[in-house]
Length: 124
Image (tube, rainbow, N blue to C red; front, side, top):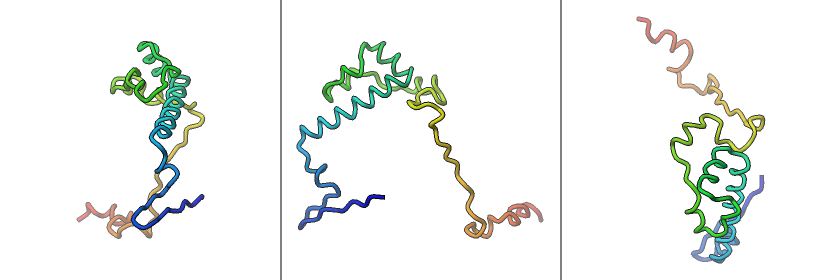
């Protein structure tokens, strides 16, 4: 893991001085580039976005300034309902990661949550 250092001078604290002191034009260019990449990925890999972009008459290449975001359709609740559960994913299912919680080990459970305590809780 890469550790980042903080930049500290008198009363100024910056975690990433290069990014935090970037000129506004550079920030806008970076945001525009990243947003365009996201729109391109969504258009190429998610049928729902392709349909809504086409219906609105826009393509990811039409996004050239941050103000252009107003021309792109928003995702609404019906889109999520209609494509549930996997229709809005931009990667193939074989690349999904299953994240399942594991129960806490018995020694870290409160004493009232032990299997014996749970099974006898209703008994009188």
